[in-house]
Image (cartoon, rainbow, N blue to C red):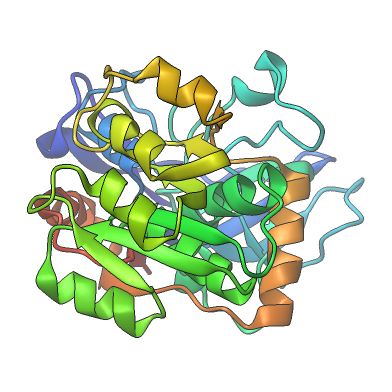
Length: 334
């Protein structure tokens, strides 16, 4: 089977196409023929060498494919089932622990940039009804992060307000999930064309963060005293404004460092006098992923796919991601 490996020291020129032997599933494993993956910022950091991985690691945390064989003890899946991966394949349910989250697809474990793989049955879930492999491959990281931030941690209900930052995969999923739940959504972007697309998807107001450096205060005013939920994707580069945008008693999920925001500044009196909940989250568990799939089956929500590449075009896909031109998800399918 074909695989793509990250060769030391990383970098797009060191993404190497090679062959590996196909293995049979162990008693509690499932053999999956992958047909699609999607790009996340985490995958980008692995590929460019920012997150060091062992020489020869297979990248990509997202995958969707078909069950080709099942181990003799597997009862949940059958040959022909359409399944997708989990970012944390050992986190089945409950609260996160080191044991549950130390295994990460495409980083500490081989990922989905392979034509076939054997995984524990517990490391997979079924895909939503009517989804293509490419559509399903957008879900395990970006969509589940949005689901957890809004539904699992926040308990979003109809009529509440949400701020999404930018137009990457997670932010667009958060917009879709929030609208499906009956929430009012506000957004930021630096592109006039993307702002129009956001409005077309039901966003109430879009602020250009390059033109308005105090966009947090602007969102606070437009939302009549602040939003209930903020999904912060920039870390140090956005957190100060996210705090400004939130309402008294609001909830901020810190989920990314886009723009290089590893470190930043918070006005702490604002944090505690606004009685804010600030929580860092990273994707979610199998139980959460199954709940998200059930919700998608009810709502009929479909992902926004910006562009598709082929199996041997991974480096080109990352270079496109690097431009920031995309709206929604970038996928590879084969």
